Amino acid sequence: MQITMTVNGEEYTREVEPRMLLTHFLRDELGLTGTHWGCDTSNCGTCSVLMDGDPVKSCTVLAATASGHQIRTVEGLEVDGVLDPVQQGFSEMHGLQCGFCTPGMMMTARALLDENPNPTEAEIREAISGQICRCTGYATIVRSIRWAADHPAAATHTEEVAS
Amino acid sequence: MHGGLAGMMHGLASQDGVASDPLNRLDERGMDRKSERSGERGATRVRSRVTIRKDDVQVPAPFAYERATSVDHALELLERLGPEARLLAGGHSLLPMMKLRVAAPEHLIDLDPLAVQLGYIREQAGEVRIGAMTRHREILASDLLARRLTMFTDAERLIADPLVRNRGTIGGALCQADPAEDLSSVIAALQGRAVIRSRSGEREVAMREFHVGPYETVVGEAEMLIEVRVPLREGAGSAYEKVKRRAGDWAVAAVGAALWLSGGTIEGAGIGTTAVGGGVTSERAEAALVGERPAEEVFDRAAEIAAEDCDPVADQRGSVDYKRHLTAELTRRALRRAAARALGAEA
Ligand SMILES: Cc1cc2nc3c(=O)[nH]c(=O)nc-3n(C[C@H](O)[C@H](O)[C@H](O)COP(=O)(O)OP(=O)(O)OC[C@H]3O[C@@H](n4cnc5c(N)ncnc54)[C@H](O)[C@@H]3O)c2cc1C
Ligand code: FES
Ligand code: FES
Image (cartoon, rainbow over all chains, first blue to last red; front, side, top):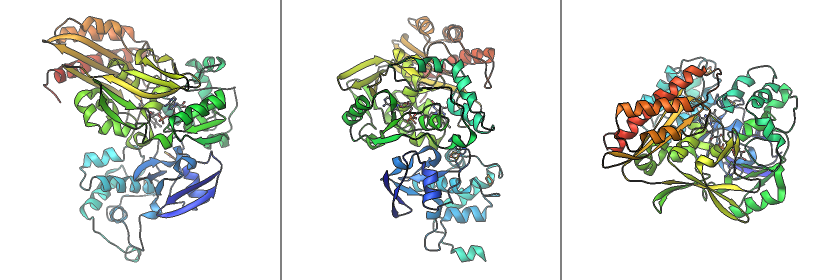
């Protein structure tokens, strides 16, 4: 069947099997492998992307259902070489170790801050409570998101981080 | 009951392709007996004892896909496509089951396009009406429910996690009829009703009669749940208490209590229990409350009865004794908070 969806502001039309999951559509059809795929049972949250602005577990959404919706993935955080404050926060506060959970965590953080620019620690913890990190113990992830809340206008260029 | 198919499947996914396990475990819950019954459209249809290879546990088996453009369209499709068609709401129970081949419908009718039309919470004719496609997130955010039917808000805070709540719907939750599902006992305790529609008309069923058994409801093959209606009463207070092992998990046990007070006396009461077997309500505990004034001894008595009435199964979440103990204690706590709310002493 033919589906059309907007991913990170760009419209894509593809022929897919109805049973294709959104995670696989993003990764295998569009090559957007930033969205990770872990438990496949809607428990770990590493596959989280924004669907019309709300974080959802893309391993449990059909690509067909997402047709006609706006999807945002981790690749859509950086715009024209400028990092999203959430990305910079994860860099500043060591919000990742292996990085497996990170794309999902960052997307949920982005959605949280869009809705609530000044969240408490409890609100941050609640927002990421559907996602598992096996490395950090969560404390640095919470700090990273808080950093992004404190620096909403941070506009770091990717080269600055790289250097 | 094992308390939550998703939780069960989580365990499964970490093992190496032992996916015949869920069928055995579903067996214990009487799920495959149900599959042999024809002519009923419950939440789960175990079609045959298929052996599942590890590679299969990633995507559902092939199916034909339709998008519902209206309720009438969905009903027409259900009628035309017959028993091998299933409705897809938020997909957070059905898609995991399809990945495991515990469900393998030939046709999926996606209700996602009806999310706006059937996504509402409104006060009308002395009751609150909630559309079938209303997502957990919207129920949690509702001021009306927080003010008048606080049990919903209590329960939603502890259902799954925020991401699952962004997709899961009240209609899907009720029709899935998982014994560990929370909203059924909430709505049963509050004496709510389900509105079920088919091409030939609409009927209302009390939530207390909605479940036929685990994973099985009265919703027929060519029918669809449209709306839930919960009466609003004066002097009412309600609360939901749940114990779970960790964030995002299903209940070990949970209890919802509603009290309707008049002149300081309990005029009506609702007790709903989750994940502990038995019925979703304890009518004997409710009867023990009516006519009494809210007090600890009265709550103790109701708690004892609710614990007697439940019928838990030992599993990885706890022993029978522990779950029975929890049922009593959570009944007590829920009654205390419901009374405080009815008396305006607690928000
Ligand atoms: C990780 C995880 C944790 C969870 N934890 C909890 C928890 O703690 N407590 C809890 O209560 N729930 C929990 N859930 C369940 C979840 O919140 C959803 O309520 C549930 O997945 C069903 O809703 P859905 O809209 O996704 O339904 P679907 O998966 O789309 O559908 C479920 C079933 O209902 C049928 N159906 C759907 N809508 C209708 C309709 N309108 N009329 C007739 N039939 C219909 C479908 O055909 C299907 O058989 C959890 C889920 C996950 C994935
Ligand atoms: S891969 Fe989607 S929740 Fe784990
Ligand atoms: S950084 Fe390794 S899982 Fe989170």
